[in-house]
Every structure is written in structure tokens, then in C-alpha cells.
Length: 84
Image (tube, rainbow, N blue to C red; front, side, top):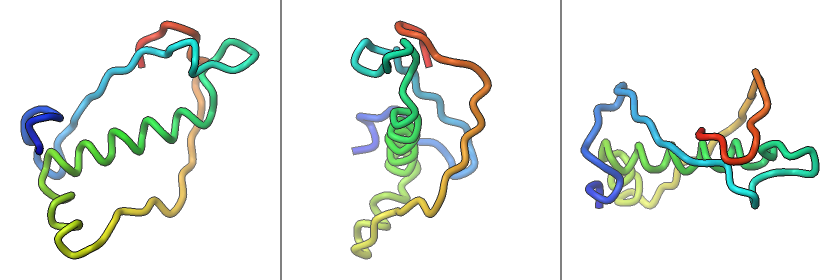
């Protein structure tokens, strides 16, 4: 299953994922919505767990990862068609 997300990575290695801001991801101010930030971080977090093998160990124990809290500091707005 790890091959679908790319090559294996170590637990402390850096993994990068690219996404383009689509028209469905923007708000009335034409910027990337706040809810999408945490959603894409969840997707990247799960993909990295699959790539480094932790996901299979969690699922074998019947566990799922849960994020307790999240604090984001926005540096700049992300406009439509920008690459994240």
C-alpha cells in the first residue's frame, strides 16, 4: 500500500506533497479557506504514516491516530490556482 504514496520514508524524514488551490477550495474573498488547511495536513499526515509503516502497526492494534490540537499562523493568503 505504501507504493501508492511514493517511496518509503523514515520517521523523522521530510516528505513533501503538492496540491493546487482549486476553485472549490476558496471562500468569498477568493482565498484558500481555513478548513482546507487542516484537511490537507491530515491527508499528508496519514500518507506519511502509510509510507513509513506506522499506519499498518496502528491498524493491526485497532488504533487510529487522533490530532489533539492544532495551531496555525497564517503568513500570507493563498489565492486560486496557487501551488501549495
